[in-house]
Amino acid sequence: MPLGPQLIGLAMSGTPASLVNLSGPGRYVHWGFIQISVANLILIGLMVLVFIAAIVIPFRWHRGGDR
Image (tube, one colour):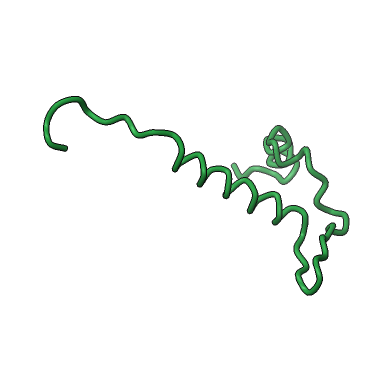
């Protein structure tokens, strides 16, 4: 029995993505000739933070051995 669109919408309504209204116009930031959407700017910032955290957080090295 195939699922109807109402049932699929009800199942998907609990996702965190439903907290953001994506049906409106996007917001953009302008720096001279650079134009970027706020959503993409936030995403790039989060990726930079994860990259910095990956460098700063020390690895757990095994004690002993030459590895």
